[in-house]
Length: 232
Length: 218
Image 1: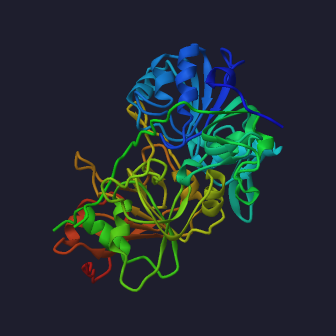
Image 2: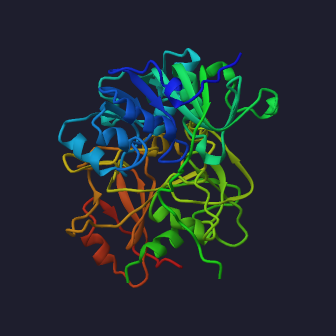
Image 3: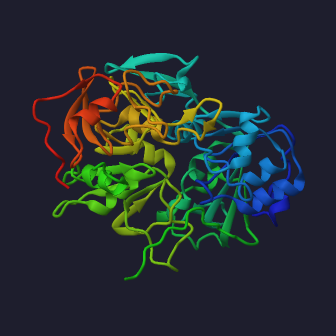
């Protein structure tokens, strides 16, 4: 089944004000940067964004925040973004912070037909407020609900025309679970190849989870914390 | 003299055991990787999806697709693997990782930890910390004994929103190594040249002090 769309514009067609989007990536690593740039251009507003982080002020999801297109963020860590912190502390932006492992599993569950699950993470903290607690093997756990989204936007290294995806290094992160949890999943890839050129043994995300795929025009791949050691 | 960050990292590195998988948090914990004791083989897990983390890359060899959970550029060791975030936290929640080292703003004598939020001032989020502390069997906290205002962060009860309850077993600060058991801090070692009196005066929580408190051997 051919999932290829012509460009980012066609890929994001149908995204409207008030929708819930999952956006892959960890920090600025493995984010669908072409799609984010185009969402700014489209000007869609009141979005709920589910993404581990919120980018930095001038890159990644920070761009959507700057343009005030986000109504609510569901994330685990937002420390790198001053504008985010300002909007959150002033109450302009609704924020739900959830433990990173719970976020990953809630997306996975959403895509896997598991409506909710128990986890020990967050028990005894404000994350547990209003959530059912149950003891398993002598240890308290809290009930966390699955997450799904109108659109999931993920970024892969290589993808084929069938929507099969391969990620590179730690740019994989949340992308595979989010691909599963989107009603419509859009994959932005660095290299789009014909079906048959990727080894089926090494596919990370099978094409069944992807509805639209396109090759991004350019990737800046900005590094958030360039850390090096000297050669001597 | 009180330890610097490097000293804290060196002392924590002595807790590493051969064959362990270890998750290091952001800040001082990251430095622990630089002081692995001779003859010990450990593998570092970073929750963004890597096992077998290597040192920072040489200048010019940074790969934007290869970072740790602190978003720093890294390298891989032979035998490393990459995986998605759900698999990563399966390793953590499923107790396949033997040791977690992380920072804290406050720790209490019953093992509670607070490190993600100062209401009205700072909200960075918990990241993976809540999953890590809820599941790890062995958690060491690397932190400073007092805050910038000189107030103890080693408390009877935490004042900040909690990250986890009753989970911390050991704390290493610039002054001391403390163990938490039976609802109290126990002074295990002191930093070279630091007096027991100084540690007592800077510890708000209940502290059990044995007759002899050995100095750390760094």
